[in-house]
Amino acid sequence: MTPQAIAQRAYAQTAAPTRTPRDTEYEAISKITHRLKAAAARQAADFGGFVQALHENRRLWTVLASGVTDSENGLPNDLRARIFYLAEFTEQHSSQVLGNKASVEPLLEINMAVLRGLRQMGAT
Image (cartoon, rainbow, N blue to C red):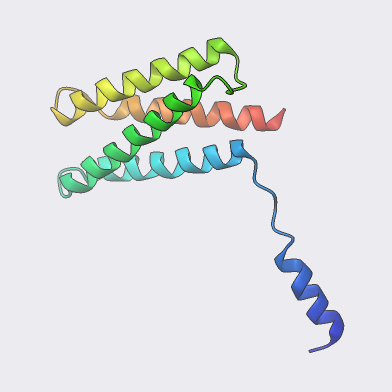
């Protein structure tokens, strides 16, 4: 291996793209949404997997809610309030889904709307 190839390889490894907090949020929400959607599709065959995916989604929204209650959070107050409301809705609706009294679809729609919002914010 030539010195040039060694140098190129060494520097290429550190040239990974920088991830912003928004990128990290997007990735986490996207993964959890994908898991929840897939688990919902096979709910009848793997109810335990569905419950686990629903729990992960609840945990995600708990983290988001605690983030917007932090006084250091830089989001506008109106947006923080809406995120907190969605976290409360997710908690209550998830209980109804587990009790077979509601569909998982509204939870998926909320997550997808948040993903669209994060994508739009990143494009500006």
